[in-house]
Amino acid sequence: QSVLTQPPSASGAPGQRVTISCSGSSSNIGSNYVHWYQQLPGAAPKLLVYRDDQRPSGVPDRFSGSKSGSSASLAISGLRTEDEADYHCAAWEDSLKGWVFGGGTKLTVL
Amino acid sequence: EVLLVESGGGLVQPGGSLRLSCAASGFSFSTYTMNWVRQAPGKGLEWLSYISGRGYTIYYADSVKGRFTISRDNGKNSLSLQMNSLRVEDTAIYYCVRDGYNLGIDFWGQGTLVTVSS
Image (tube, rainbow over all chains, first blue to last red; front, side):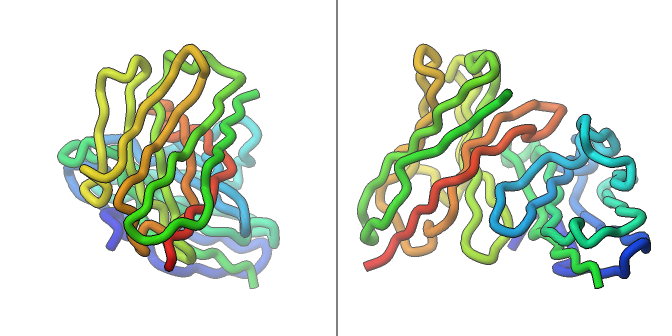
């Protein structure tokens, strides 16, 4: 049982926009930044969005993050087949003094 | 280029021990907090342990507290995880990760597979 809650799956057709949610509490998302990771099949996770809505260099602006209260979202526009991957959200948990993750969302591009 | 290379994974019997290592390069290792994160087959990510740059501050997840020990050698740019009393449920890919603090976990190693089975 993950501390952060994500839907297990999401899907969309090429070119469409999809949103993945991540729900937490006041002691994690509500008081700390949210970060998103993309994990391609068979690979290690890679930082996709940091500090709620910032993109590392090299990440296309098709990927965008947002946060409101204790929930966050990752939006992917202009879906491409290469976006098929697992997406994980993460935040620092003040009470645990550690990182907490969502269970991951498997994105399928139809 | 930041590189994190894990080693030491393998097959171990329940109750056994294993020591994972992570060789870091491409950044000033001693100035960064480091963590271990694992991923069981087909499951999500689970944070295990945190160690500050100089090693003075250490945290553990409840699932490994008392069984796993994190350490670092800044002279060798190396991070370690000593795992004792291993259980079947510890079977996972173990990742060495760099903690960018407010930048999140910003770099991941390729992972090393630990299988606990009789």
